[in-house]
Image 1: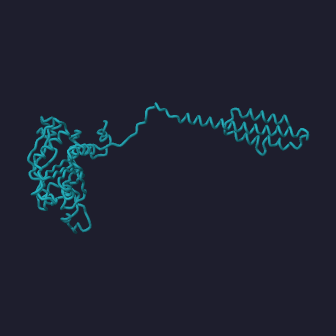
Image 2: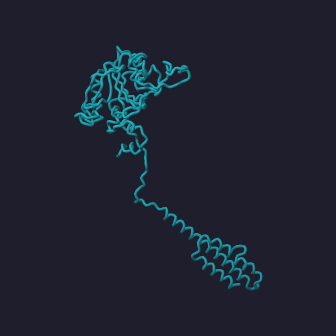
Image 3: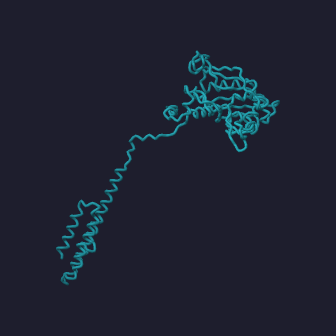
Length: 356
């Protein structure tokens, strides 16, 4: 019996060397299980001579404790080794270059709009916005464009069909039909009715017209308008503000000029030109050989518009101006076709993102 117990002790130590975790459980069952080798020897203690039984029993318990301790120690070694290997495999090399992450960016039109906002904010303007869906009065009549005014031919209006706004067999909506705004000028009326003078606001926004899509036109476009109303505002103030605005946007050496113009909601009206950004004023196809590019229209707010805005034209006067944001973007980046801005080709629009 004594020799058999010593063999179990030696055998377990030999088998544990190099044993992996998958076989450790099987060894425990082979030695300590209900049918294990050591368990069978312990069951034979009754057949041992009574004089030797205490010593053999003590040896058997000692072997059992050693076997259990050896198996537990090996299990701990295997667990520690697995942890070390896992930590080594998951180690982060802080000197390795980072993986570039593809991030979003601003559309060129939005980039230019933000720049315009920053420039005009420095001039004391705040942003005022209005709805993109208007009715006929806000979009036309309030701006001195009555139903029979020939200036309405300049705006190819998109009408919104609503219950009761269409008559049977009539291809045109009723006179009071709801429309998609054709310009951001209706926001001028809303600003005058909401804010108390002095007023100094810009009105960026999206507009819609029923136009054929080509290199310079689209049925959806963006505008930025400005409005200043005070007691002693003059055309000279408008001229000075626009000249400073052009220099801030295009550089100190930008040439400017004013030409007579016509808009129903301003009187007098002017067109504001800058020296051609392509040819420098020598004449090219972009400026139609004139050396000048028109970037916006402006003028003194018409008394009718002031009155419809809830202000007394005998007490207040103001000036307004408006520009096509898409055109400004084309000029800024030298883009020849408006449709490129409206497309979904990321290869094109991402080349104008910051840092490129």
